[in-house]
Amino acid sequence: MLKGLLFDLDGVLTNSAKYHLSAWNNLANELGITLTDAQLDQLRGISRMDSLNMILKFGGQEDKYTEAEKEKFAAEKNAKFVEQIQKMTPEDILPGIPQLLKDAKAQNLKMAIASASKNAPTILNKLGIMDEFDGIVDPSTLHRGKPDPEIYVKAQELLDLKADEVISFEDAQAGVEAIKAADQFAVGIGDKELLKEADYIVASTAELKLSEIEEVFNKRK
Ligand code: G6P
Ligand code: MG
Image (cartoon, rainbow, N blue to C red; front, side, top):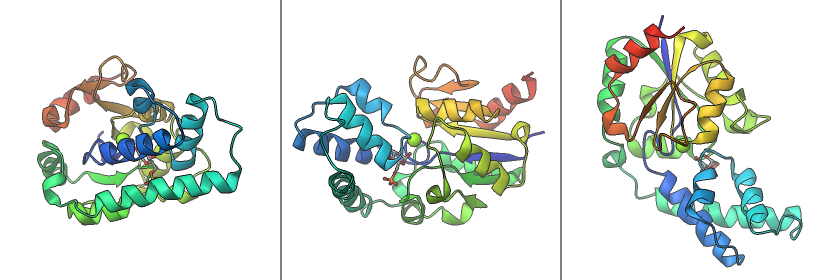
């Protein structure tokens, strides 16, 4: 029986993913690395240092910098990101999400955030939806990033639920893989081909309807 919903944040509840990607793109350019759209897409859901390491690898620069230099680059990128999110307001909640949260509340479903972002609490406060959630996984406690299932298992445990009692929402390929590795029902938001492992896929959050997703959830094996 469905008892809870687990949400990624960037690209699911709000479009902060675009700020992450543009901040990474700027940093890559400064390092003389040109990223393709497909490479940028692969950064979705990936933790800060893992993202930087992926970018350096894409540019063939994986051994070029010391850890201290990499920390500095990551801090620079984060400073740009933090600057961008200051202007966020409740208007930045993606279409379809307010209704989804309302429908979930009406059914007494518990809800948690499974975002790798250390900026998640700031963003949720800016959006004015912090109080809607019963738990937020603290990414600094994680040993492994998405696509490892750890973050989704932790989110489910925060709500005291089992894998077959939750539906999890993601826009990232690595995130959908994490959900499936955690044995949960995955809703993918975005490109059908990239997110093909998901149990239910929509092109955008505007298409999310809890009753329709639940119908598929209830029929799953
Ligand atoms: C989310 C985003 C990623 C980001 C990661 C870490 O998973 O989708 O793009 O790199 O969080 O975010 P942070 O705010 O801690 O750098
Ligand atoms: Mg995301």
